[in-house]
Length: 188
Image 1 (cartoon, rainbow, N blue to C red):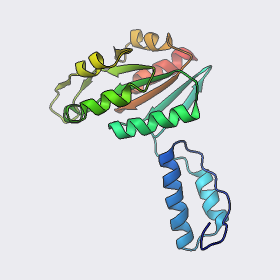
Image 2: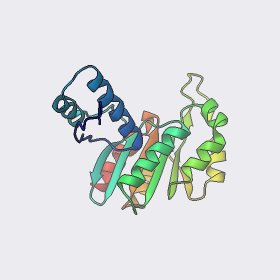
Image 3: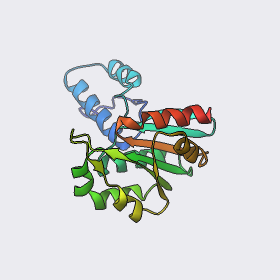
């Protein structure tokens, strides 16, 4: 409804409440500047989104999601979207932290939100601040039941593949790409 008139139904091809809010903002701006309904709807339907924002690959009975989420709030929104899109499926969060300061500052929040997944794989990491400090993930591992460490080696790929069928949600740094691609190849 815009100016007390029904405009129509809009279609978006992205998942998550945050994407709905983004679409609503885009619709509002489009209508304010005088774009026609058809033009706005076509633009929303064609919009592919940014890379690493809930990118989905389906492999046999499993789903692999890649999302840049690196903060507890972003992880929460990503997990909520996954549970909404894939209800009643096992959720495996694969998180690769990238900042010591972020992990230290939001340790409690990371623990709370990652506990929402059925299992949590934590990537060992080096701080991306350029100081080559290893990020200590022991607090996450010791406070999240059903959590374990992964790297980009074949053993970690096999460890994740053993959990299939599942929804695997890769979050954090792009360094998880090798592990993610290894899992896709292994499950194919």
